[in-house]
Length: 160
Image 1 (spheres, rainbow, N blue to C red):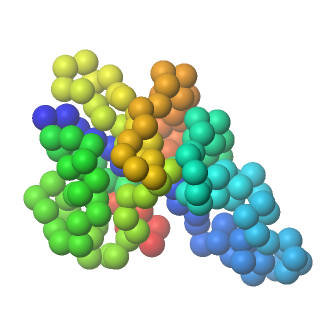
Image 2: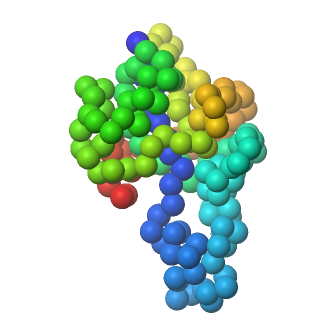
């Protein structure tokens, strides 16, 4: 069974304050979704009405928008989606993860599927309906940034 790593688009409290114009360094009119490159990249992947482009994923990766959510073994992407979004605990996911009421796996989030044999990852984007396999170019760029991404077992839980 393959292992899946979920990476969710995430803004820190400081970023959210900037969006809302609640930072002393900004005038109230300087907030919003275009206030910084990171916030704009977050908005592009998480607020998409249509499809999220690979360029949007690359920008979000460069600006370190993605935070490691959970890692679990599952039969498929669909099962991993169910594990992450289940309002109840399941053996593949620590109960504390769901107990915090964290947001569900959503459009713009990424899932890396690690194959059992060679450990090579395939990167998928959670789309409006189903999954979109990302190109090798995006996978390589994301893999290069993965060591700098937050990859503690419960990074999102701690950030909540």
